[in-house]
Image 1 (tube, helix red, strand yellow):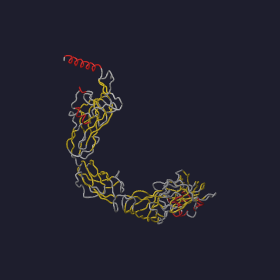
Image 2 (image 1 turned 120 degrees about the horizontal axis):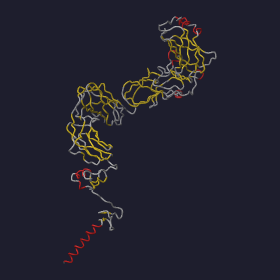
Image 3 (image 1 turned 45 degrees about the vertical axis):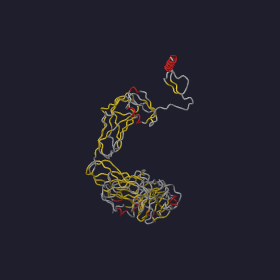
Amino acid sequence: MKKIVYTLIFTALTVAQTFAQAPVVVGGTQNGDEHATMEILSQDGKKGFMPPRLTTDQINELSTNLAGVSKGLTVFNTDTDCLQFWKGTKWSDCSTYSNAEVEFICSQSTIKGTYNVDKVAGDNEFMEVKVKVTKGGPLVLYTNTQNGIRFYLSTILDIGEHTIQVPALGTPTAAGELTFDLFDQSANPICAGTANFKATVVENKAAFTINCDQSSFVGTILEGSSASGQTLKLKIAVSKSGNYYIKTNTVHGLWFEGSGSVSLGATEIILDLKGSVDTVPGDGKIAFNFFDKNDISLAQCTVTIYVSAEKAVFTAVCTGSVFSGGIGLGTGASISGGARLFYVGYTFGENDYIKVKINVTRPGFVDIGTKPDPDIVKVGMMYTFAGYIDKVGIQDVYLRPVNSKVPPLTINQGGGGYMYLDTFSFLYNNITKSEICSLNSPNHPFTIDKLVANIALGVYDPLLNSATNQYLKNSISLFNPIVPASGLDIKINIQTEQLGLFSFKGVANGMTLESNQGVYTFDENGQTADFKLYGTPNKGGTVVFPMYNVITGDSAGSITIDMREIFYIN
């Protein structure tokens, strides 16, 4: 019996000595690392070590029972998919970066700003946190969400003391006192119970009336589409400053909604269109009423918008259409049929258009233009309008040139081949490929010149004007407007160096001298050009008019008129 007892004691001592000298090896029979207390092996390379698996909430709950003696306790966070270990006062973080080491000065940390129901938290609403950074690096601070409000900040801090502003995010939905819990990026609680992280939300409701008649819808919404960027500009008269929240009823899947703050007086607020619209029958008109967040009606009026169809329904009123553009012929024009004048290389601008009235009975997409006559297409004079019309009724549509410039002519007609003359005939529906109405009443003729003439100007020759000199003498006197106001017709010698269109203008002594016309034949002996003289002469004697080329903007020399010889003005 004694022998058995002695044997057991010897065995126990031997085992204890073995454990004292070598690590415990799990998963193998070989000796473990001499520096390790325990070593875990995977002989087939297909198994690993499985630490306790906990959620962030479970880890936070566990931390309430831990102290400094538990340093090194390790768990796997299933929310963030990383290992965390207890550092004695907090858990390690999961970031791959080396985060800032921070001491929080909780007694000097608080929440700042004014928090109102239905008012979005702005730049003046934040959590102020005092910190002392002992090691620089990234820091994330966030809170729980209370009553539609939370605080969040991601920043990088340098060593030293800082006052951090953690912005408030969201919109409070009800009045009352809120208490927030602050955490860092590792979900460690910050200043729990030791900082004043409280905010009071107050009701500051504005009083106002809505003026529906002066409100307007901005944007276009198509059948079968979702709202994106469309707004309603709502005119209101505010009798009490404060915050507002306005929404409308939902019609065909659409509604308006908006919130903010307003001051006393008349103002304009913006409501955003939301939702997705279904099919709207008839003319596409839908009406909205206004309510507050408690579904109490805010106005006895409605706002109407139109939902656009894929194709608009309309008729055109071509009578009274306006053709605008060209160089502006002025008072000395001499062009066949009163045509608008263009030249090769002319750059189209804002004043180049054909204005036509259309009567829209269903808003939608409109694509109209001048009829694509082959000749007109070749000279680059096509005008079109393509876009959405978002309201019904008679309205102006501006057809703009398709090209940016008048291209070189490929068709020669009239004036020895230097001029092309044509007229827009019909307004054309590019969607249905059909004529809409005639543009021939009134006619819209246009003329295109191949070249801009190069003219050498001469002087006023009384012999050229002998037939009208007496009339001129009776129509002009010093300090009195020239009669008629449209100007006196006079002739000036010119020398043509290059055929085409020319337009010259000069101003001197209160008078204007100008001419707009085309020269299409050469004459070695020179030619005469018709000019207009108008204005109120303020000086007699010899008058020199410095001229410039209206088309090119270049200086064009001068024209001299002796007022004493012609008009008896000294």
